[in-house]
Image 1 (cartoon, rainbow over the protein chains, first blue to last red):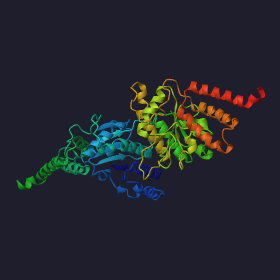
Image 2 (cartoon, each protein chain N blue to C red):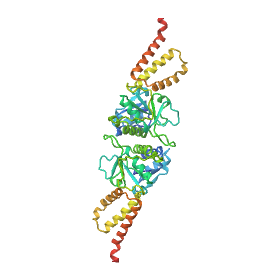
Image 3 (cartoon, rainbow over the protein chains, first blue to last red):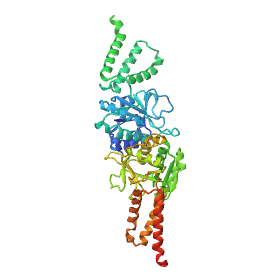
Image 4 (cartoon, chains in turn yellow, red):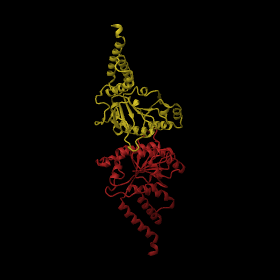
Length: 254
Length: 254
């Protein structure tokens, strides 16, 4: 399991999040685009957990999760309409266990303290998780949210990987159509595929340039809903590369 | 559910704990013997949750839990031998739900940041709960420990109070002998009873004064293991009062 913090501001929160990782036996932390002085402060704090020294820093969320096959966004989301499946935290163990059992790699993504994950951030997520909090005070402190999520997964998703049977009634599958035997294509493959499809759309004059950003967003979500396995995503990529090459070079050869 | 913080030091932790209460719909917070300047700072912090304004301050843990019928101490406890039953947090919902269903009142007690609850503090507890953390980094931040415990109870102990059937296989009952129909005697009644028994022991010359403190401790634990119901604790109290009066006044009358 990889934990990703997107643009955390408060060094105390970063330290608390790292401590929660250490408490629940997680070792992989990636921080996306942190505010540099605060990041240095968090890393150099007295008693900073080992996990903080070994943390990876990435410029973008896309880069941070490029190797992951199931990317889970966190937040209470009560104020916006979700574009993906939403699962409550007490029901998250099933999907995570399934993904790990089929050899996938799971990322849990936390947004900045003030606003949480943006709509753009969320478009890299296959699934959203909601911590069931009181509607009167829904927003959790970052370090506490990390602790609660990792507690839930460490006690209910990982022990079962050691041989007990998988949970049979999962309230929310990442996608019902998802192929259960071949590993899912990691996020980076989907981004590569999206890039070629976008170029193809542009080359084909599919839609005006003003729609470019909206199309990008929708395409990212679409690919994560489809959740192609590694082989299928390679096939689709090959197809679009061929089409793109035709669109760009066809006239010269014909 | 009452949350009790014993001698918290860091105002940020107090604020974080209070926020976790608000997040998970708990309203009752009691703070035992806080460090006054830090307590004022926590209460006056910008955006301090409502629960912090309404918090009760007590001088002793005994006073804080005097109205509670099930007092649960928290900590990792890995370094000391527990004198009570210990239950893992994922298994705590059952005992709490049972206690609430029989009309009892439950307190969850957290110790100071540095050392956790003392052996003396723990002697007021019927049951200890352990958060299953990594043995390499067992000690949790106070605010995060409160969040994790309240998340577990709010999602798994309270919903079932609204009508779903009680869990049948409870790994750890507070006491097998516990009467299931009459409400348990609250902590304050047990302290009152212990006081009269101690006086009786002293009046009877039961043990040297040097043993007084050890006897007090053992007596507290004994009464919590027995967990008498309200009526029985009243009966025992009556008996000891009578014996004590005899011991103190018998010679004058005989």
